[in-house]
Image (cartoon, rainbow, N blue to C red; front, side, top):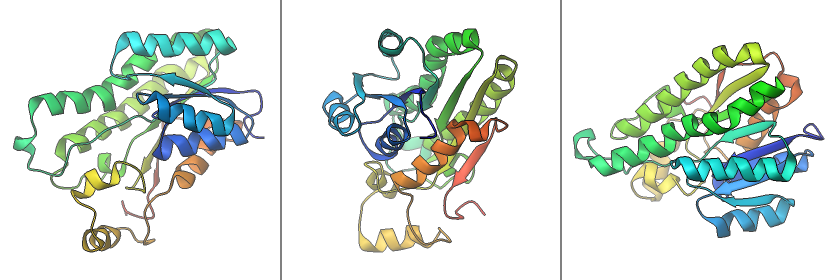
Length: 246
């Protein structure tokens, strides 16, 4: 029960890493809001862990404001924020990615961090406590060809994490990131272009531990960084990648 008495908002919690993090936080005693653009998916996971389901478009200011307001209405406070929602583009030459798709990637992967900060950081500063965890990617550290704009968005997230950590430290608010390698999530096929045994084998060959990330791997790292055990850890972008970035 390492998060006993804590409240947590997890975006993109209807599937993949976000669902794994939400389940683990609930199992460790937190009250969790599972926010997702797919409300039905969020409700399904929320039912498993006695959480609150909330529809949100993390790229939209009004939608993020409504999410924050719903959490405050339910709990009166937000102790933990996990910015997990993210998207990618299919592998392709950088100049062939359409402008609308580029804008959407930056809106969901980068602007979302700004929007949640706008609506949640003030209450954390007022309380002089809080934890923010950004789910970035190894792509922001060791970029892969033909995923250029996704890589760049995750590099932005890592830099934002460090900038936020420095600015918010005097208020007792910690900000960290985790960098997963590709995992068994709905985005895996998009990263690989197509899901075949040959492409999987080629991808796995780049991971020294020889397997993909799992939601449980991310949940374990997130639990540590968001718990009081990590009270001296801020501004870190922890690679949870089986050695991919070595």
